[in-house]
Amino acid sequence: MEEVISDPQYQSLLILWLAIAVDALWRWPQSTHPLTLMRYLVLQMGRKVVPSSDYGPSQHYISGSLAALVLLAPLVICVAILVYMAQYPVFFEAIILVALLDFGYQRQQYKKVLASVGRNKKSLAREMVQTITARQCNSLTDIGIAKAAIESLWLKFLYLYCGVIFYFVVAGPIGALAYRLLLLTSWQWHYRTPNMVFFALPVRKLVSILTIPPAVIGGGLTLLVSHPINGFNAMRRSPSKDKTSLLLALMGGALNIKLGGPVIYANKKYRYVRVGGVNEVKYSHMLAAKSIIVYAMIATASVATLVLLALASL
Image (cartoon, rainbow, N blue to C red):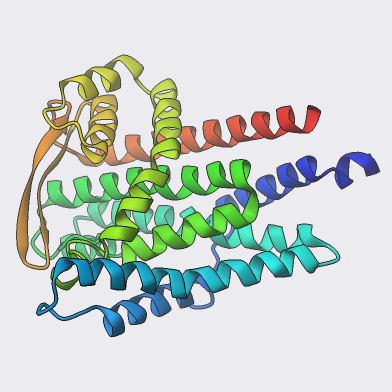
């Protein structure tokens, strides 16, 4: 038993189980969460160094790349050195993964949206959904609130939950840390913010590439635990073949509901295509989406466990 516990691969498995259990059972208060400080630092860095509109796109690209590098690289390197020098690195690795796997907050806010919609408190529902999406929510209808909540929970499951677990299995806690910080930076420097259009592009492109593997794996597992034929057909019928549209089509097809469509960012409307099924979103679909994502979480954790066990046995 001692040899099993001391094996790095089995330690990784125990760390993964611990992080998943903590995410399922406990909520780290946002006021004291390490990523809350990082969100503030990233946001302030963006505000201070983003060039004015007088500069060309290339200057924005350079500034955005250097800002992310200067802010994130020293932190990742310092944490890596700390873990390497620690007498019991498994302790620090566990803390890192517990902090990174904060999908529980998204589920908690989604439940609040559910409760508000169920009690027909539209204003409160708009406030709650605004905490988990970057779009403008003050004019959303009941259907718009439900769609925004489902889309946000679904995409964050793929990018945050599946992404952190994937890069932890592939590259260890430091790899997961680098991925999560880049994802956080991309969300804070949202490309639909007028002065961030070019500034955020380098980080956004990198994150767009990094999210492909976990999105493919998470999407595939979601198909297996829901309605694979409906989801696959909806993806095939999608008029737009970009990553986000295909992922929304998958969930929309699994629930037979329409997702996508017009959204508003910074008082500007963007007309995305509608994808998925044929029905409008209802309260019951919000409950079904939550159940599907829970099943997909279990499937993701199971696959990650099998992969780590296979690596440990080599």
